[in-house]
Amino acid sequence: MPETGDVSSNKQIQKRPKGVKYGFGPHLTLDGYECDSNKLDDMNFLYGFLDTMPERIGMTKLMPPYILYYDGKDKPEDRGFSGVVIIAESHISIHTYPEKRFLTFDIYSCKIFDIEKTAEYVSKAFGIGNYDKKVTKRGREFPKDMESVEGIIDHDRKAA
Image 1: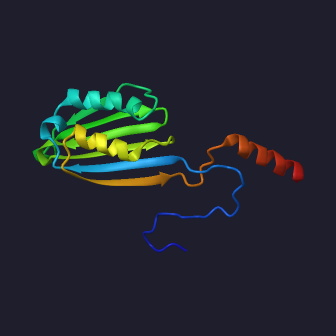
Image 2: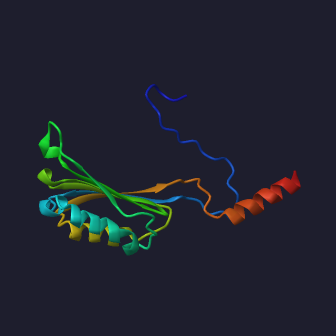
Image 3: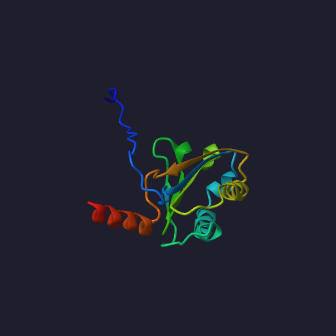
Protein backbone atom coordinates (compact mmCIF):
# COMPACT_ATOMS: atom_id res chain seq x y z
CA MET A 1 0.00 0.00 0.00
CA PRO A 2 1.55 3.36 -1.03
CA GLU A 3 2.17 5.97 1.63
CA THR A 4 0.12 9.17 1.62
CA GLY A 5 1.31 11.52 -1.10
CA ASP A 6 3.13 8.78 -3.04
CA VAL A 7 1.91 9.04 -6.62
CA SER A 8 4.63 7.04 -8.34
CA SER A 9 4.26 3.39 -9.25
CA ASN A 10 6.97 0.85 -9.84
CA LYS A 11 4.97 -2.25 -10.71
CA GLN A 12 7.06 -5.10 -12.02
CA ILE A 13 5.93 -7.16 -14.98
CA GLN A 14 6.07 -10.77 -13.80
CA LYS A 15 6.66 -12.46 -17.14
CA ARG A 16 8.55 -10.89 -20.02
CA PRO A 17 8.62 -12.84 -23.28
CA LYS A 18 12.12 -13.99 -24.26
CA GLY A 19 13.58 -12.53 -27.43
CA VAL A 20 11.78 -9.17 -27.19
CA LYS A 21 13.82 -5.98 -26.88
CA TYR A 22 12.41 -3.52 -24.36
CA GLY A 23 12.79 0.18 -23.62
CA PHE A 24 11.38 3.25 -25.32
CA GLY A 25 14.55 5.28 -25.40
CA PRO A 26 16.76 7.92 -23.78
CA HIS A 27 15.66 11.23 -22.30
CA LEU A 28 18.57 13.67 -22.04
CA THR A 29 18.10 16.71 -19.83
CA LEU A 30 20.76 19.36 -19.60
CA ASP A 31 20.79 22.43 -17.33
CA GLY A 32 23.32 24.97 -18.58
CA TYR A 33 24.88 27.65 -16.35
CA GLU A 34 27.09 30.65 -17.21
CA CYS A 35 25.77 30.66 -20.80
CA ASP A 36 26.31 33.33 -23.45
CA SER A 37 23.34 35.61 -22.65
CA ASN A 38 23.35 37.07 -26.20
CA LYS A 39 22.70 33.63 -27.69
CA LEU A 40 20.01 32.88 -25.11
CA ASP A 41 18.30 36.13 -26.10
CA ASP A 42 18.54 35.69 -29.89
CA MET A 43 15.39 34.17 -31.41
CA ASN A 44 17.07 33.67 -34.80
CA PHE A 45 19.97 31.81 -33.22
CA LEU A 46 17.57 29.61 -31.23
CA TYR A 47 15.51 28.89 -34.34
CA GLY A 48 18.61 27.85 -36.31
CA PHE A 49 19.83 25.72 -33.42
CA LEU A 50 16.52 23.83 -33.10
CA ASP A 51 16.06 23.62 -36.87
CA THR A 52 19.36 21.81 -37.41
CA MET A 53 19.41 19.71 -34.23
CA PRO A 54 17.29 16.79 -35.52
CA GLU A 55 19.56 16.14 -38.51
CA ARG A 56 22.65 16.56 -36.33
CA ILE A 57 21.53 13.66 -34.10
CA GLY A 58 20.06 11.50 -36.88
CA MET A 59 16.39 12.22 -36.21
CA THR A 60 13.46 13.13 -38.48
CA LYS A 61 12.05 16.64 -38.12
CA LEU A 62 8.24 16.70 -38.48
CA MET A 63 7.75 20.47 -38.28
CA PRO A 64 9.78 23.64 -38.14
CA PRO A 65 10.75 24.83 -34.65
CA TYR A 66 8.17 26.78 -32.69
CA ILE A 67 9.57 29.46 -30.39
CA LEU A 68 7.70 31.66 -27.91
CA TYR A 69 8.88 34.68 -25.97
CA TYR A 70 7.93 35.18 -22.32
CA ASP A 71 8.42 38.68 -20.85
CA GLY A 72 8.63 37.50 -17.24
CA LYS A 73 5.52 39.46 -16.18
CA ASP A 74 6.25 40.74 -12.64
CA LYS A 75 9.72 39.07 -12.65
CA PRO A 76 11.55 40.50 -15.70
CA GLU A 77 14.67 38.48 -14.82
CA ASP A 78 12.67 35.35 -15.71
CA ARG A 79 12.08 36.49 -19.28
CA GLY A 80 13.32 34.36 -22.14
CA PHE A 81 12.40 31.99 -24.92
CA SER A 82 10.88 28.53 -24.99
CA GLY A 83 11.26 26.47 -28.14
CA VAL A 84 10.40 23.03 -29.37
CA VAL A 85 10.84 20.99 -32.50
CA ILE A 86 8.74 17.88 -32.88
CA ILE A 87 10.59 14.92 -34.33
CA ALA A 88 9.23 11.56 -35.47
CA GLU A 89 11.13 10.05 -32.54
CA SER A 90 9.56 12.52 -29.99
CA HIS A 91 10.83 16.07 -29.27
CA ILE A 92 13.69 18.49 -28.65
CA SER A 93 13.08 21.54 -26.44
CA ILE A 94 14.88 24.48 -24.88
CA HIS A 95 14.03 27.20 -22.35
CA THR A 96 16.31 30.22 -21.95
CA TYR A 97 16.82 32.78 -19.18
CA PRO A 98 19.21 35.42 -20.61
CA GLU A 99 19.33 37.56 -17.43
CA LYS A 100 20.33 34.52 -15.38
CA ARG A 101 22.61 33.10 -18.12
CA PHE A 102 20.76 29.77 -17.74
CA LEU A 103 19.08 27.28 -20.07
CA THR A 104 17.28 23.98 -19.85
CA PHE A 105 17.45 21.63 -22.81
CA ASP A 106 16.08 18.19 -23.44
CA ILE A 107 15.78 15.49 -26.06
CA TYR A 108 13.30 12.69 -25.59
CA SER A 109 13.64 10.00 -28.22
CA CYS A 110 12.70 6.43 -29.05
CA LYS A 111 15.93 6.26 -31.05
CA ILE A 112 19.42 6.03 -29.58
CA PHE A 113 21.67 9.05 -30.19
CA ASP A 114 25.14 10.07 -29.06
CA ILE A 115 24.46 11.64 -25.65
CA GLU A 116 28.03 12.85 -25.01
CA LYS A 117 28.45 14.38 -28.46
CA THR A 118 25.07 16.12 -28.13
CA ALA A 119 25.88 17.56 -24.68
CA GLU A 120 29.24 18.79 -25.97
CA TYR A 121 27.60 20.42 -29.01
CA VAL A 122 24.95 22.20 -26.89
CA SER A 123 27.65 23.35 -24.48
CA LYS A 124 29.75 24.85 -27.26
CA ALA A 125 26.78 26.35 -29.11
CA PHE A 126 25.67 28.33 -26.05
CA GLY A 127 29.07 28.94 -24.47
CA ILE A 128 28.01 27.03 -21.37
CA GLY A 129 30.47 27.36 -18.48
CA ASN A 130 29.04 24.48 -16.44
CA TYR A 131 26.17 22.03 -16.83
CA ASP A 132 24.22 19.29 -15.14
CA LYS A 133 23.35 16.37 -17.39
CA LYS A 134 20.91 13.57 -16.68
CA VAL A 135 19.92 10.64 -18.88
CA THR A 136 16.83 8.63 -18.08
CA LYS A 137 15.95 5.38 -19.83
CA ARG A 138 12.24 5.77 -20.55
CA GLY A 139 9.61 3.08 -21.09
CA ARG A 140 11.38 0.17 -19.41
CA GLU A 141 8.62 -2.26 -20.40
CA PHE A 142 7.92 -0.79 -23.87
CA PRO A 143 8.30 -3.62 -26.44
CA LYS A 144 10.61 -2.42 -29.23
CA ASP A 145 10.29 -5.44 -31.52
CA MET A 146 6.64 -6.03 -32.42
CA GLU A 147 7.38 -8.98 -34.74
CA SER A 148 8.76 -10.92 -31.77
CA VAL A 149 5.83 -9.85 -29.59
CA GLU A 150 3.30 -10.91 -32.25
CA GLY A 151 5.05 -14.29 -32.67
CA ILE A 152 4.95 -14.92 -28.93
CA ILE A 153 1.27 -13.92 -28.72
CA ASP A 154 0.42 -16.23 -31.64
CA HIS A 155 2.35 -19.07 -29.98
CA ASP A 156 0.56 -18.49 -26.65
CA ARG A 157 -2.85 -18.42 -28.38
CA LYS A 158 -2.18 -21.72 -30.13
CA ALA A 159 -1.02 -23.30 -26.86
CA ALA A 160 -4.15 -22.17 -25.00
